[in-house]
Image 1 (tube, rainbow, N blue to C red):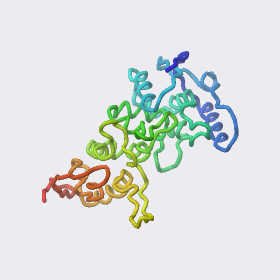
Image 2: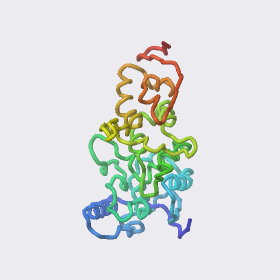
Image 3: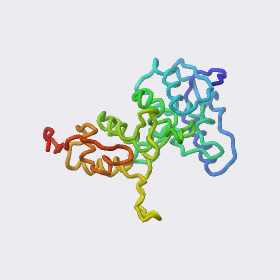
Image 4: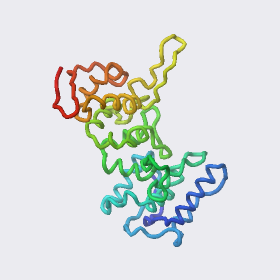
Length: 284
C-alpha cells in the first residue's frame, strides 16, 4: 500500500455535514460535481477532534482491512460516546470517500456516509446507523474481531472491495438481537461461514425465490439461507420455543429438513429438544 501524508482526525460541524449532504443529493440526482474535500480542513466547517490521532491516505483491499487499520488507530482513545459522534464518522467517510463510493456510479444513500443519528437520522423507526461505511467496519473489528471477515469480505467467488459492505451486514448485523446472542451468532456462522476462507458461503444471503424451472423442479434459491432463517423461521419458532437458549445443532433439528439438509448443512444427528418459554430443556 502506498502511504501519503498524515492528517490529524477532525470532525465536521453541522454546517459541514449539511454541505456534504447537499453534495450527495446532487450527485445522486446526476450532477457531475466534485466531492467537497475542502471541508476536511476548512476551519469554519470542521475542527480538530481532540483525539490526537493521525491517519494516512491508504488504499485498502476491503472494509475488513480498513476497519483493522482504523481500530488500531482509535483503540487507545476509544470512548463509548464516540459511537454516536456524527461529525467524527462523517469526516472519516469524506476523507476516504473516493474508495467508499461505487466506482463510476452515483454515491450510495446518505446514511452510508453521514451517520444516521440525532438530527441526521434517516427514518423514524429503523436505526440505519449500521450502514455507515466507516463506523460499521470499526465496530465489527472492535466487538467481533474474529468473525469480522464473514461480514465484510464477501464470498471467495465474489469478494467485496472497499466500495461495498456486503449482505451479511444488511441481513444480520442490522439485527442486534442476533449479534447480541452468542448462540444465534454461533448458529449463523455454523451454517453460513466457510470454515476455510472465513468468508460467507456463496448464495447464503440470497433472497428466497419460489419459481418453477424449465426442468419442472422448483428453484431452491434462498432455501435454507440466512434470510429464510432470520425473517421466517426464527420468528415462527420463537412463538413456541425459547430458541435463544439452544445450541446450533438443537436449533436446526427444530428448524427442520430445509436447514438440516440444505446445501449449507448436511446430516445432523443431534436429538430434538423442546423448549417452551420459562421451562428447562426437555428431550423427546
